[in-house]
Amino acid sequence: SKNVVILISGRGSNMEAIINAAIPEARIAAVIANRADAAGLGFGQARGIATAVVDHKAFASREAFDAELATVIDGYAPDLVVLAGFMRVLTPDFVAHYAGRLINIHPSLLPSFPGLHTHARALESGVKLHGASVHFVTADLDCGPIIIQAAVPVCDDDDEKALSARVLAQEHRIYPQAVRWFVEGRVELAAGRARIRDAESGAEGWS
Ligand code: GAR
Image 1 (cartoon, helix red, strand yellow):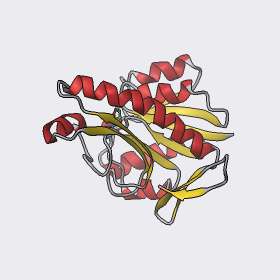
Image 2 (cartoon, rainbow, N blue to C red):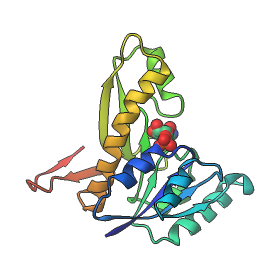
Image 3 (cartoon, rainbow, N blue to C red):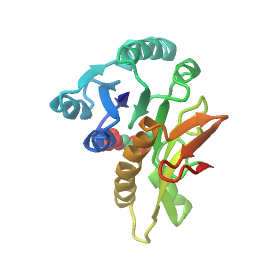
Image 4 (cartoon, rainbow, N blue to C red):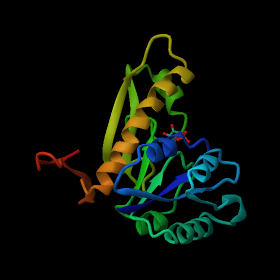
């Protein structure tokens, strides 16, 4: 099986979805947070998963934080590092160190709405479809090759809360799916693209 390290900053509901999916090939080696008060740490502990905190506020620079974070992550020999609501921008050195084995979920249909406040911006813009994307992390924020997306309708009476809940339900479906594909060797970063292999048919495609 493959060692998976999950990074969180808060609630950790995507982390929960991945753990609850009980993916046979995925061994959840650790949950690491950049805040001691990240609510999701308790869930990991309750499941007997190793947890750690690397508090970004204890470091003078992004480089110093990322270096310590990588040291802690590498202590768990990860095959895959999963950003699940991890709200820190990572340095190019960190991203390069995990090239091809670092994935993120973003609450929009990328390349629309990179960055923060995606649901409010979707409502403001008047789009009729919104959603979530799982992508390989590259040095450019929220711009890496897309592995899987889910779209939801934007309804006339939506507010941020209603829309974010509709998207989050899809996040909880597609993130475990992406992790499953990765640990089964069905998705890889190749030539700057997410290459998805269909295990059933053997067909290959480019997302
Ligand atoms: C999720 O909606 C995730 O897509 C988003 O934060 C939320 C975390 O929820 N991530 C980002 O905005 C990344 N920039 P969770 O802690 O319950 O998984």
